[in-house]
Image (cartoon, rainbow, N blue to C red; front, side):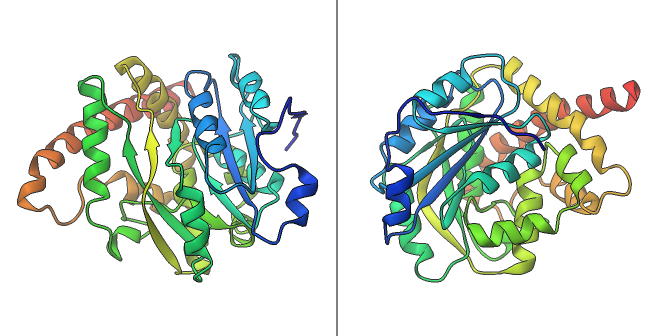
Length: 301
């Protein structure tokens, strides 16, 4: 896959020479983007404010037509162009990374200031990957409150079942780079280029087949949730169109089918029923948009 690198305007973190001289492990933050101008600055600002200083930031852009690349370059990120699917963008970010560890961050996410420092300390204890607890920033409307309730519910109970790659409720984001590279080698090239939705689940499945050393880092990531139904619809309609890749001959069809069947965690405590109802409403909304996208894609074939 081709890649075009935009030189950074300035670097808020350690430079390339400094990265190689440090004894402490470098952490690469790989962020795929696509018209992320509304959210990318806050994401990168949260990276800049990390208490852990040895960072390498790679932004992999999917043909944005807004200010995304300009903002990313201004923050000192290495900006790489990758017009293929989201899974390919994740791979490109790992290939371009220089750290011992890689954080797969999304452009609408904001890191808690000590998140990477705490993650490195946990990885040094022998973990190969970490689930980061994900929460929502302060909700401003009913839609964002649904997202907040959903995230609170799925992170309320983290156990072995939560970590099942097929039916679990969470996915790791912080990995050993060498594990990620081995996992990506197991993914067929035609899948890599076409997958958008379930990209993260595929990565985790292949990592999980190689290692079961998964940890959990509390209070690590906040989401800048969508502010309108139109934004939710556009994103999930696109995800739905991409689901056609799982129709036949795809080695991850069963993974996609089982993950799409998720509604609630297996056990709901009585006190969590209000959260569960809000979570179910949100998931139904997302799945309607995704099914509309899938049907559109099949009709247009």
